[in-house]
Length: 269
Image 1: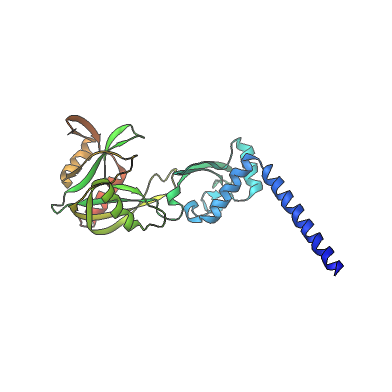
Image 2: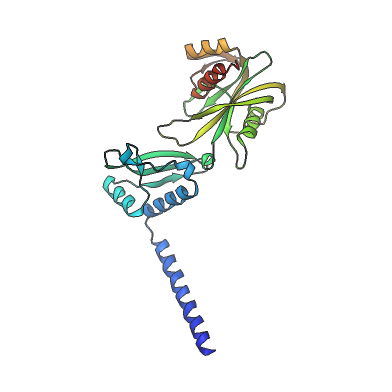
């Protein structure tokens, strides 16, 4: 009996020592190691968002996923690898990589938080009964200009892309979708962003109230014929009067152009 109690005491002591050592190591982990640990954690949990590991011997860019080599590359290039920064919208990662030449290097990418477990969002080319295209006149902070764009937005957690498409059109324009068809997918920018969006063609009819997010600065929603849209794309911009003010709105959105191409090719426009 006494021997059993002694053994349990020893086991508890070792367990306590192990916890103390683990806590000490975590507290003394360098910021760079934490960046790499977070990176490896996300890669294991969301491999789809990071993409295939690749094989440099096959002419691909290979991801380095072992801690010692990542630390070595980090030292070599004098910059942290792993998760560089993270907020509620984006994760900035700097991959440690092997080039097809066999040389080490680094590469910056951005992952949308909403794209960790699937499509980050949706784009909808919606038409009314006259087959005119529904577009937003929206002010974009990134370009610091008014832009002519299709309704689009992020996918909420647990939401299907079909549900997201219907919600985005309703929220941004007030219109209700009556029919909807998938067109394909498009990347935001294949050079730096990992995420992609699903593109839909939809038919609208009934108009209700909108419920836009505060971040969405949409001056007005208009409908344009396909030929008018093509003319505006060629001109690059449209002069339009909104609330008594003349506005120059630029027409150069890649999502819009791609959706237009797919819809026309599939005989929907």
